[in-house]
Length: 119
Image 1 (spheres, rainbow, N blue to C red):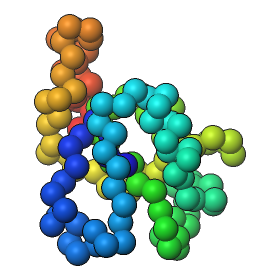
Image 2 (image 1 turned 30 degrees about the vertical axis):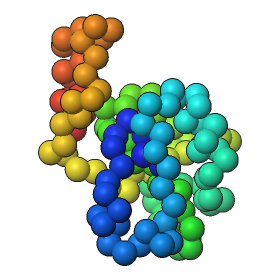
Image 3 (image 1 turned 90 degrees about the vertical axis):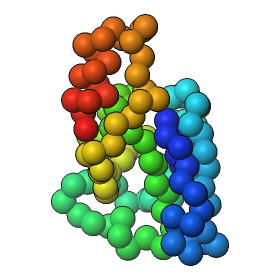
Image 4 (image 1 turned 135 degrees about the vertical axis):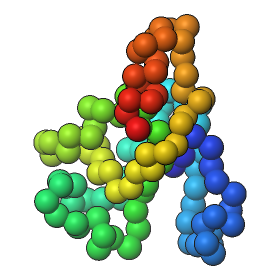
């Protein structure tokens, strides 16, 4: 699931486009995203930072989102047994998400610290 970012060209999937399903939900609000993720989530094993059970799964649901997407923060702690929990498996720190600049609502410093400071 691609949220708040653009989906890549199919050729970047390196021939895996026959076995992967992608869903572009770039402009979706957080609550609607949560509904879709709940329907698509495949992991039954709790994701904590000490194990790598997610590597054993044949199927998986990946959420690709910029680090500046603060709406996801409550789900990243991987605590508890209810609801969705996420595990960060990859990060690219040199990306600058210009689509997430919101000077009107967040102001200059809050926007810059969120978009640049969280990379």
